[in-house]
Length: 470
DNA sequence: ATCGGCTCGCGCAA
DNA sequence: TGCGCGAAGCCGAT
Image 1 (spheres, rainbow, N blue to C red):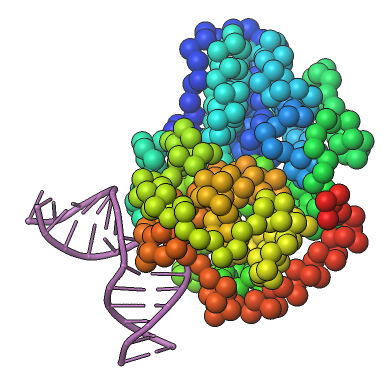
Image 2 (spheres, rainbow, N blue to C red):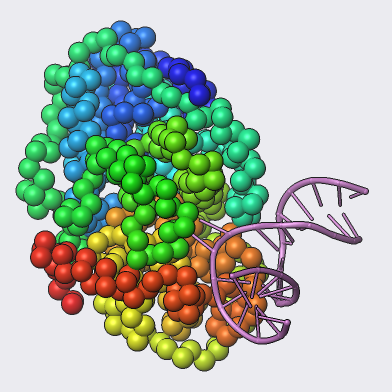
């Protein structure tokens, strides 16, 4: 691994052809990569500011109608932004957070900018924001892709069929992209750039003033947002848990996982940084390989999916064979049927499933292995597969701290056959992969998982996590 | 404990 | 055109 301050050209894209112009500053419109370190967009913006002899402004648009987001997500994100504002100040940069639609905030501040730099998001609304800013800014807009290891179009020009088809494509490029990002010092002190923004100091009152859904409470007692927290989690994982990662990934009663998904979702830590830390650790090659498989291959398969599948959030995103077989079995008799409300409040006959749902509701997280079982049973217990898909995706996005991530859409669709292959045919599922409670009992100490969740729910309640419908 | 079949289609070899 | 093989499994046979 080499050390360099050069940012790979393939991470950088011009989003319009507006001519250069005079301006008071270079603007970095931070929206996805919410961090002050190992952020290619930020370093690129600093380099541009230095080249133009200008100061740098960094802005963030805080909208109160982000699709499906609620107080749980906002709290975690704002904790991270607090952290990021402090870290930027140490680099002589002010973070200007303004209330409003992200594209509108970026355009306000773009009026006095010579150049706008933005980071990259792959969901429909994230792309729409950037398209509008590119069309209306009146100055060059440059997008820098910093939240994947291999840029999405470098990996592949199309929607990949499965992990096995994207895996070799990603591995071909890994060495070219797993490189350190050296920081560049900003020449002109930009601490007092004279742009007013929200005060992030008092998060409670800021959250109160936002017109958002408060029915899902924050889970700060367990998960606090921010780059510092993310780094601490990573180093604790590497020191204490990584050695058991392989054997315990299918054991939800353990906690030998990173819990980095939520930090990656808000861009609070870079996947390139995480991968480098893991590869430089003393662990065995086998462990490193299985970690890279999750962090890079599967995560970037999800990015590939949402990027190249216009309807990534609709039942029609499923492969033909899966929709065909599920349609053939849609009238099969269901042994159990539950309403969305019964599912949401964890009132089924299945104690394991209820524990998984309660983990999600009260902690904002669910063990990776239980996510599969959780989704498969929603398919099994719903009237139709397309309704099951809708319910699974909605519950996922409402309660997971990292809901609405590309991974959310890929993981939920996987339940219904995406990126998978057919298996033995049975009722309701057709040839879509089935999972059983017996499998959990065989592979894990599932009773201990149920006990662990009972304790965790109790702790959450003591910390003030409460629901009106409970 | 371990193994093969289940069942579809991609991607590569020929 | 044929063939190997696959995002995390299940089940029954041995």
